[in-house]
Image 1 (tube, rainbow, N blue to C red):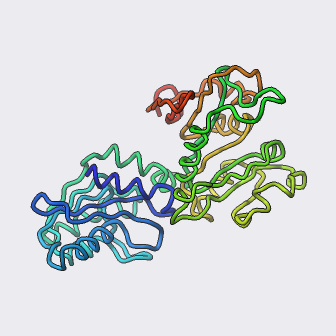
Image 2: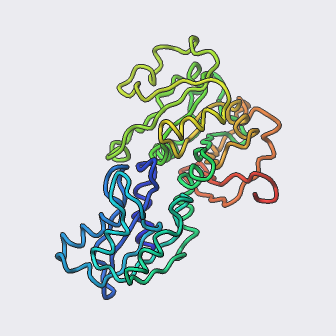
Image 3: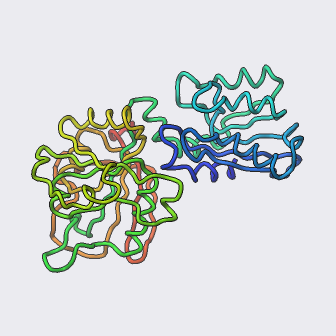
Length: 338
């Protein structure tokens, strides 16, 4: 199952509106094949793994084997045929999966179909690790809202800008490369009109390896004054300008539109403190990734609003990147942990 989860992580940021899923096929304690869901419309992880088994070991290799899958196999026909049927037809004798499908219309359906075909079913193996990978998909299924990650690069005094003449960057080159990896994990990057006017950001994945097999993320500019946006800003003139949108109005409604109409499961916010504070105030933030640079600047605050200052977090992961420190943590909706 650890290997299946490693396969699943390869699909993070690439599979919307489908979940990232990984699978491995084992027989007589030998790993025969593995696979991951690479893009909506392409074969699911189970079928990728089975295809590799057949390619490497022949048609009969699947009979009597065990499939380890990070998510309950699908049981309905969508853009691809149901994986449950594929497992049955291949002669798989045992299916082990980590967690049930968050889609309430599918959850638990696979068990009965597999068992009726004589297949042994086990579930719940490494469930928490699998559910962490699936959080954006699960949130959309549960609420219709995408998973929203705030990316914040700030100084020791909680500021996001340096004094005039000192350059734009607070964090190291290594941290900025790490941001590229974060961008590759999301479907959309959101910013404010103020940030576009001030910084002229491109908000794109620059690393060709991280971009391989996927589109550039959508880019969304929130502004009440679109006419004041600089027409020469990179996100309006580069080759991906067709993936740039502007919106104004109710934040929650905009996020719901992104999920429903643009298949967005995950969003990273790269903006100034006003938008971040408003998202926090409306309880629309799910996760924060904070890069703390070893300097004191006295610049603009990371979150410009007192209502956001008591933002509580859990599942905190600390790491060192060059001279910077990175914190990645999930946002608590209230102090009770809900």
